[in-house]
Length: 270
Image (cartoon, rainbow, N blue to C red; front, side, top):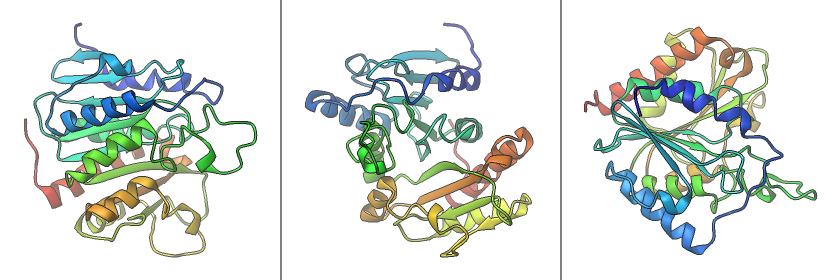
């Protein structure tokens, strides 16, 4: 395949990720294949793609692995540079539900050679039973379910010590544009650098146990719990709707996140 616009290609998958799409968790063999894929991704390689129903699309130095968003195995979208060992995982856990978070993630990935984009393949409540009352009851809500394919891949990468930047969205609230938290993990240099860079970009950043945004801190987030257990950095970043709908602000946030990674990890190169 020739050159494509990777951002447009991935973004075009998102509208099909609706709550009405059928969804099922992986069986035991598929779960093992997901862990093998994750181990390969951590080495800058791919393996077991066909058995997981992931279609591979190449463009230049970039590979997109994507499940069919209309199938019951709507599990993953991964964007990487084959042969480049990743140094950070950029995560989009709630595509479509958290509008335009994938655009921030893709822009950040474009800015850092060592970034691997990990995106859920389905809407967070796809496949949820009618009686579901909590996020843990929704099999596709990857930030609540350790058995979700996204979570299985993230867990393997976190065990390698890779930092994670996870992007979420919230409806506009007075006085805050972004809410920043380490989830269940501890704070550290990356979280501090992200806060400093976002403030320098002009965004109003909420941190700590303030009642105005206490529900946005992701303390029970599965990926944050894994990071805490492994001692890896985890950045849980909630972005307001107004910010996410503004292309200029999205780009400024992506640039701020890339700058924070450069500050802490150094500049990555292919």
